[in-house]
Image (cartoon, rainbow, N blue to C red):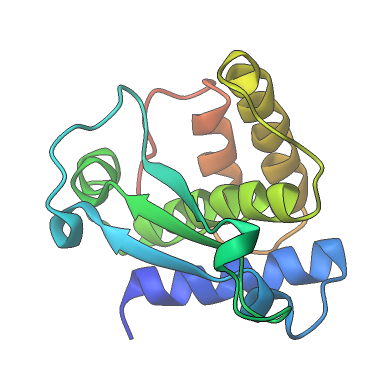
Length: 162
């Protein structure tokens, strides 16, 4: 299992615990994780480490009530993450957990109808998710997670492995 897959699993557990999600929540709200290398995409938004895409079906396309209406795709900008972390596992691990937790918070907010983001609302929603991610991960005992939170708050220009 890759470090990214482990980060996805840990982040899913963290989100499930925080929001008291049932065991079938992620089955009803499916997502996939692709790296930039896997996707072949070349356009990376400035300052982004991942991007969430939401694909949907119209109600007329659903085959049953259990047929998922949405699929989420998390596109991880692995090259940018490796550049920022230097590929050092002591920094890469908490950084990946942060990025994946952030994206899973987005999915959870969408699925619980806590946000219906329009183009005009994107910055405000990003700030809400950023603050919520910091709050959630601030209570998780992962080495260097505090440094990663400070990095995303702009308090540190880099994360130093030690």
